[in-house]
Length: 178
Image 1: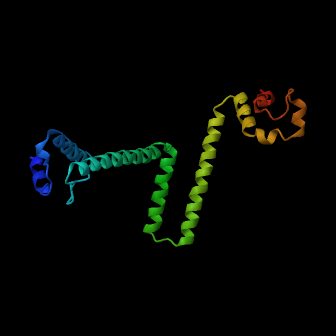
Image 2 (image 1 turned 45 degrees about the vertical axis):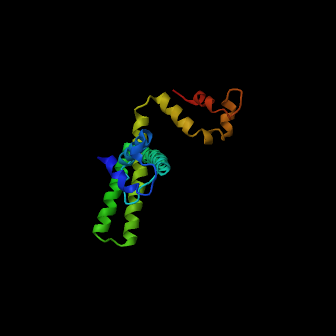
Image 3 (image 1 turned 45 degrees about the horizontal axis):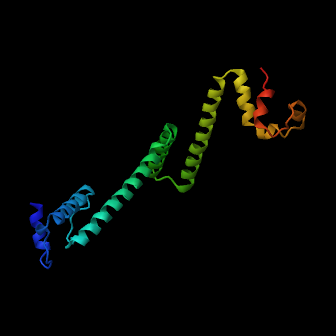
């Protein structure tokens, strides 16, 4: 039994763990905490009840901190969009290919630049396809709102603006022609 192993570690202690029930509960909690956190028992173990309580607190606090760290890392990877995951996988494969073929640094740099610029071009192409699926009215509103920062700086636009000035972005749909 695990409780019998405490006898060897308590050689210099006056009150043994087996003498009182609450010390047995603390010792059981200590062993459960070590087992649950998979820390292991190690060569150095707490000898008295105070040391066991401190170890239990440290184990639980470190277990909670570790769970938070694992949760944050998992959420980072879980939040990656599918397109981002595919692109990262592609870049990993490109890097492996360049390493396997021992390409010089200048060639590696050009290859990486190509794939990075191709990613932006692909994103632009996907956005164009999305826009083409919209109605002409909605396409015009999206285009106007996307470029409202520049459109409102055109002095001619101010003549067609309803009262309130050019600062209000919500007025952009008034300029969409069907």
